[in-house]
Amino acid sequence: MVNVQRLGRIPDNGTFFYFRGCFINNFYPGIESATRFVLEKLGVNYVVSDDQTCCGTPEFSSLNADTVLTCLVGRNSSIILEKTPYVITDCNGCYSSFYVAEALMENPQVKFQTDKILKKIGKKFEKVEVIHIADLFYKKMSEILKKTTFGLGELRMAVHYGCHYSHVDGEKGLDSVENPSFIEEMVEKLGGTPVEYTEKTLCCGFGGIQQTVHKTIAYAVTQKKFDSLSDAYAEAIVVICPYCLNVLDKYQGNLLDVEMLENPIPVIHLSQLLALLMGAEPKKLGFQMHRIPVEPIIAKLSPKET
Image (cartoon, rainbow, N blue to C red; front, side):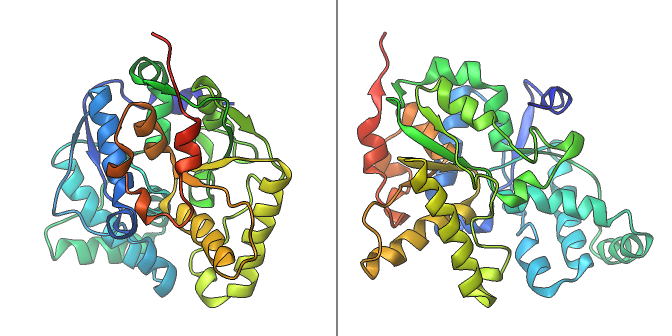
């Protein structure tokens, strides 16, 4: 069930800072193009800054130093607050970085070291209101429906939320950790058929850097995910995280390369999906970066009756 308190903290109007993730910029720029397209179609006022840096998740995961994350998030939050207290992001890693850093700052030693380091560059750690793009789109669902020119044509669509999103729980999370369902609700309203599958909350297999250091175990997790998706006859997978898109898409590509996969399932980010339904040109949404073609999704789209 959707957290009404959390939904109420997402402003209806005002200015948002669009925090652009490194992974999206370098691997899936089409996600950023799609997010910007949807925001502009909805009339959402947003700003960006070239002074923004990486959120800190890659460094934190590999170096395991708390102050690496808190200092990077603190520096970014200072830049953000020069423009607005509200942040939107279309990356689960960026989303969780802010909340993990906020929790780490409750440790007096971490706070002392972070404040000391940031002071040297004229910055300080301050809290900002971080909103995942999926949460914002859910709140604006009625407006989205008015702007869409296509429906999903009863496409059987499975949702993968991703660990870094789901683990931000309590009053900060929009939905249940154990069984989130708000994106399935969106899929249904958009004319698709939400698919329930047993491993919905299972990790994609990336696991921070586990796919690099423990490939066999990581790939086994991904395979378990796909076995569940296949058993549910999913025709497409919608994600809200570029890392998860990369794993679920490229894993299938690897299997295709060795002729171990017959029926791949296209993977698409929620921003890309909504942009398609709002009439964006597919060639501008970066689908050429996907290993599994998304044409089966596009072919299913049906023009809305006017």
